[in-house]
Length: 107
Image 1 (tube, rainbow, N blue to C red):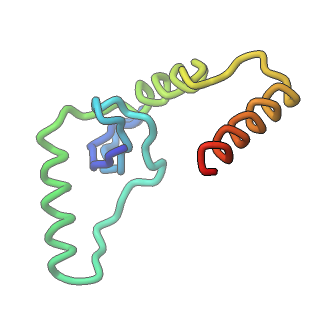
Image 2: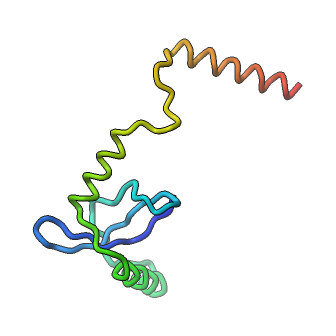
């Protein structure tokens, strides 16, 4: 996962800069609901933040409403790693088998 800053526009037409969290293919998986503020522990840190904020203006402005819709759709879809239909007993049996295999291989 990577993060960056992006410019957002809300329904009232106000703009803000927020942290955005993305997959490696730049698919947005979440964002900070609170806009960021410009505050640093040193002048260098503050200058770095200003630089990252400036870079956010080189990217398309995101709509809060559109991103929220996309995230809701993404969350509703099961993960490809999701194991549908297994009971707790089946999961425990698989874990026990994996543990036995691991212990056997270490012997």
